[in-house]
Image 1 (cartoon, rainbow, N blue to C red):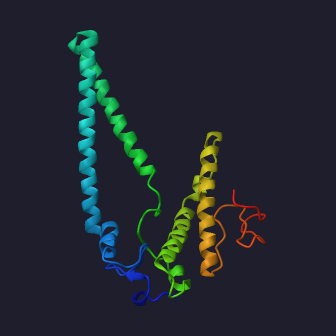
Image 2 (image 1 turned 30 degrees about the vertical axis):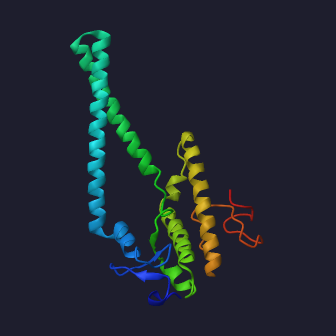
Image 3 (image 1 turned 60 degrees about the horizontal axis):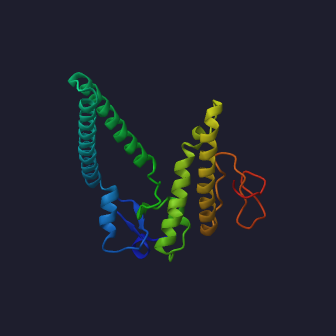
Length: 218
């Protein structure tokens, strides 16, 4: 069991136990505040909102001006040019929405977060002298699998034929997450929980499986 005062983990101001991937250091508390402190989070969200607003306004203005200019050159009519300008506004708005959705969907879950909470099972099962890097890796693996369990059933439910590709992709992603969790459970010496959806998973010794026939995860 890990004892926070004399180990790689630390108790944050909110009372929960966290681990810094690089080990406790002068930047650990700042890293925690940047990610989890409500005041810092709200401040970062406000800055991001203002930045997106400014970007959206500039994009819309530039595209609208370009559309207006093209309209004047092509048609010579202010009315038609106004239509071109309005079309530019619509294009600018769609561009901003698309860019925002790409950034949001491309955010990896916990993968690049240097400070993460330590789940209770990791805190209990890990050796007292475990390194910060190992505790961080185990915590990410356990927490990510638990997080995916909440939605994977819906993500892999196929109601229409066109949903099959999305379901297959979600199953493959969960398989990767579950494999990392299995490795963490083996290193921690705890019995792993079964996958939330049917998966063919070979155990680490190659002699058994969890939820399948013993073939590698697919």
